[in-house]
Image (cartoon, rainbow, N blue to C red; front, side, top):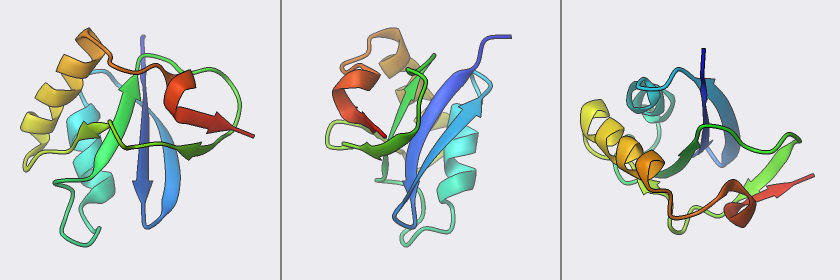
Length: 95
């Protein structure tokens, strides 16, 4: 089964998740639901794969903006994955 790689920051801690494609939106909302202000407005990255290694930092400046609902966020994720504006090597820093 193909999987997605989800990069997000929660409580100032970078998280890298492997996720079933199509479930990124709900996963993002579940991981960020207890952040101040809730999940909406946070930025994340999602690709089908990322280079191997330990991700130690990410530039979320142009990341996917988390929307008010999981389904709207999934729509944003799907649009990004269909036409990525950045590659993992452009925004992720490895150890």
